[in-house]
Image (tube, rainbow, N blue to C red; front, top):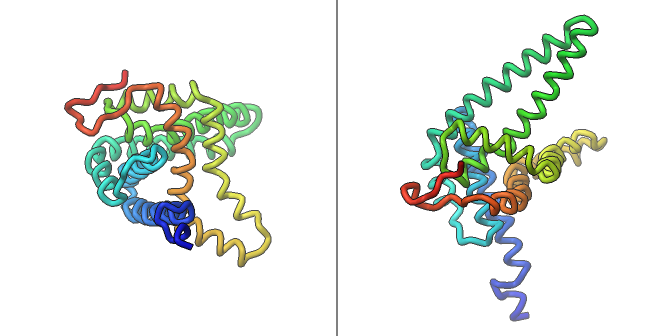
Length: 220
């Protein structure tokens, strides 16, 4: 019985991590509500989840807002760039869809490839920003190169990201609502935590970001 109530017990460790992910998730969603701050919020989310994966001591609120503040400018600019590019891809895809054959089909395939590349960059860019000091241009370039260089990990992480869409194929409305509620409470943080296991393995091959930007080395 004494072992069960030991705070080092696996059950309490697990429940502590669940509570941390819930708090982190709600914090991330709250900071994403002003759309312009979504980039900084996602960067801070990955900053904390990568620390959790490494079992490094991380105070959720302190670590989150440290990264949020530290990367706010670059993350916001990157977020605006990604929003503009995403909107253009959406418009171009719709235009191609309404064009006649065969030009519409060819353009549709081209934009589909660009959309896939866009999603891959979006997947990597905020974790890369959370881990490395660099210019905005090089952050985007490195996100693209890493996504291509580590394709098996990239596709696994994309599958993890799109898994929640399976909720909408469940025939029971009550189960759907229950799972949607769970996703709101945990979803983005759990996805980031799962993908952080891959990002940690990938980033270990590169120069890690140091706490002090004046002393940190810059990734090429």
